[in-house]
Image 1: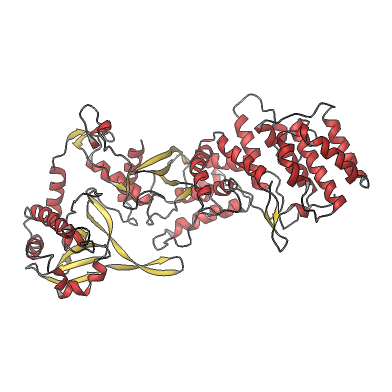
Image 2: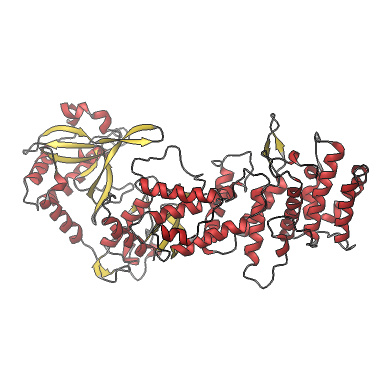
Length: 623
């Protein structure tokens, strides 16, 4: 299904005049230099092929991307490409002679043998010129050639080289392209039924390398790979185990590499070790732009150094318009998307990939009509809705912002703690959002764990640096419990899972959470704001997990705090009455602990001035 969807998208890309991708049997690679030859095969000049690219605020030079014969797969083996490669293969030049004196010579000989073998089949002056050059060129004396010496430093940096004959690209010669395509399909390929097309075709032995997945090998990793005897089935080895034609393998590889490249106008989404790409079965790029605007309205994952030279400006604007509406609290209805010319029935795909040794692991692959995904994303935001502490907090919480609450605020997102946490939860959260399923239990446990271990901290300037219980954490707890019980007959906590305080809900966990907020408020009014450690710092974790062991102590202390505050005393008595004289619970389950947190958050939010602009428990009003 994945390969078929990618191959279909490849067919769409081929017809898009704004997309530079390779045809079947070819690869789109960066090329640094062109060797300009005479008709007799003499090296006339080396022409740099660099182009300016905008990278953030800087302009840098990058190699020109060109369509060349399909790239071979190699790791430590010697395998040459046809009519292009790095300087070690094309010229026998390298800086690695110290470790292996024959390193460059072996690679040049492999390049010369392959290219002469194929070019000898072509009736073309350009082919004869390249053959003459390869026959005359001597790697041992190459550094003394005046043209090579002029560009030696750049050549040794490892960029790719192509050939020109009297200024014309050899790869544009129709005769040379013909012999290459015949050679490629005429190699000892097994003819089998392709799993994607169902046709009997030459089967690809080694599938293409996929580049651009965060954490995977820089040279690329395979989506489909068999490289051990244990994977042999009925005598079928490597690609024959999962027969995919050369045509389809090349196509899906090109499509996936395009989605992961900077050519794609829609940014990749990173969640832990998962790299997420997405596309519609349509040439209209606005489907993907709208999806990104919905799922990540804050653009938190955008890299400041991301290349922007090939961005689709129309798609960018559409994406920002969608995101802006979300940030302003305006729901994106399907009717609005229809008016923009988008069809909600268009098939849409979301693929999450993660590194796994030399292969890629598929974290998830989801496909639905675009309208289904749009509704599920908006349902995700609807479930998260809760009364905000302060007006300047975002109405819509992106997956990134939720995952950020799983780790200590004292570490950065690049630290190992963040990477390990997000690698386990990022893909699961995205899958839950896009399928409408319950959120991962591990994420709920991680949020509660941070509530237990974090504390309210303020900087030297008096601004809050971190908050034990904040808007994002409370919103996620509410949404988690809503989705967990949505498909069940009864939700015992439904009345607690509201936007704001529910004064009539009598569940002990919710009432005790409210009671803790009132006791904290009473302490602050009695003692003042400058308290070294509040009851929240000392007792919240225990009160949330084992109320019976903590609340008797807190209630005894409350007599001192409420002696001069009749209002707080009445509130405490009212909440105790709601417990119906039942004994305090000796312990609360994880779900009940979440309800306790919501009770505390709702009650505390009711104390806040609604126009507060600074986050922090010291901003509580005296209501």
